[in-house]
Image (tube, rainbow, N blue to C red; front, side, top):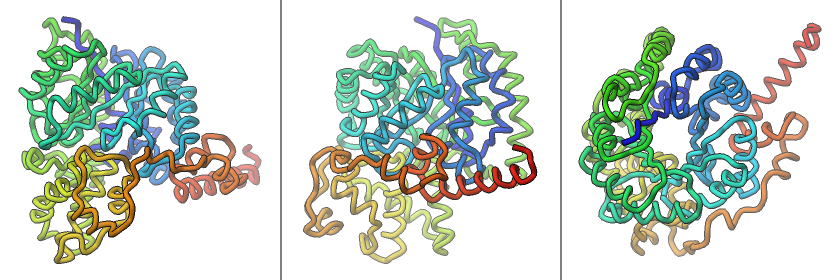
Length: 457
């Protein structure tokens, strides 16, 4: 049995899960060189919500963050998470944007691109897979793990065979809700290993309290790589702690070979930073609590905190338990979509509306209508005629790959943003988050103007 490799997630999913992706460049960059010495297989540093949060809340350029991390990480592969045709946004983008975005991400320093689709619809991943392969990077295809009458072991093994046939370099079991049970993980990985020689990675969350047990059973079953986060950014709705796993495996056949002293320095660096986020209430104790109900309702941590704040705004906090119970019903109605971005937000919002409006599907968000029309892809189970009619009336359901209906966007957006954009990267940022990027670019322009007035440019 080969030693277990570790992907360190604290610079992406760790702070996304616990503090809404608020780590700034000033907090990240000073420790990258130390992290680079530890011996990780890779560090997940980009993608997911990092891009949006940099622009929206931190007034930082996410592309510059990637360049600066790359400059400091000379030994470790850098990894990003991409939502397939959604890239890092919440809707489908045209093929020209997907291709150009990934090309740029790879040329700026990304070695491994983990791609997933919220519906496990492989058509939504093909453009990403082809681009990553063409650019010479490593393409990891992720299963969005969920359970339902249709999401069986056979379903996932069939999906992995499809991933392999379209060129995946490795496979990730992405358990965003923390619902993959230890013995189910053992059986699933044993069976996956019978049908593919591709490396298998496990990404799970501690939300329900089972992640560490699941990880250990996955290692015993022969998993190649696991995702962990340095202790101050671990547990709760994040990943299991890196140091704890390294100590657990030390001296065994699975020994990671990672430098424990180095991990100690990294943890010591992040402790006061996380204390600051506890004091300013960015880190809520709620996300650190174990919630076994997750196993019943499959609600990922991020979705749970979104729902709590949504219901507070609607003065309906007392109906929280009713909404939790409504989520599985909405999921069933909508063909059992896995609860991962953007489906988790959509299903959660529909469940909230179903409870507070006093009638199921009295209020229907536009995104749910688009989903039922097929504009997000094909659900694992066909949505019934009754629900389809209730949500979109007599409108037609599309069966083509959704992106086939989109026209190229780059030139149009380039014209729209005009001379505020100083690079291709600026235009790509604007395409994904138009309003937020425009404000960011205006602030940057003003700052440049101010500096030139003072003669500092």
